[in-house]
Image 1 (spheres, rainbow over the protein chains, first blue to last red):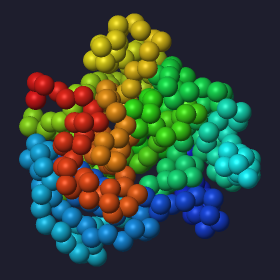
Image 2 (image 1 turned 135 degrees about the horizontal axis):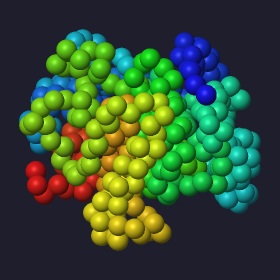
Image 3 (image 1 turned 30 degrees about the horizontal axis):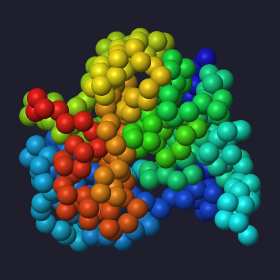
Image 4 (image 1 turned 90 degrees about the vertical axis):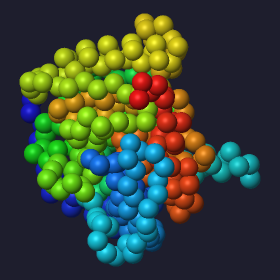
Length: 80
Length: 247
């Protein structure tokens, strides 16, 4: 039997459960390491931690080096 | 009071997903549905992404130390076809592959990058990047899934079992040794399956599950983020996975 997910309803429930404290959204966040050109972009995906974003290029994924910049600008984006 | 007793009492305040489960059910509305009468679809109570799903075995004695089975693939495949938005399913087989709970479960998240496929700065999983120079710093097995419809879970499972035999040999096991642990990650989307043999779950106090090995590690605090910067992601991922000496 086909199973269909109502994502809008799920998101509504998710937000309600976060408000109730049953879901601890924001206790950790993701960084994103690789890209087409192996740039590294740290993207804030939660609101729990206030850190400065970085944007890094690592050809063939060697060491992570590059500049830090203000998380309120440019490449810092929210996911989800 | 004895610490173990305190811990036990604290645990008893939280309902779990069945006997033997080590995953708390903090609110009844966390449960969304059941799939195939073998899995519970629920919201992850500690999500990094919004939302983040758990596909839990209804049999709560099933363990994360087991490889995926046909029922796991059937439920995963059904979920991937349940919504127009692309998602991915991940499985962390054993603690050395980054699992933190032992009640057998997959996790399902939104698949990154496809909505902005033309944006060169948008993050994508490496199998979605058509670039011959694209190499991960660890060994992995990639299977492209062609023309497999919603009924195709059995075909994919068959390929997974073949890759699992290869994974065992990477770990120095006999390919048919189904008694020993075989740490690995699985990432499944409609178009491909990736299996990543794992050596360890954490290194220098940072860890990665399947999503982490695909380039989306999670960080709980500034200090762990600093480790990723200081050690370098390629070095860390290589230590967590198995070095691919051909690259």
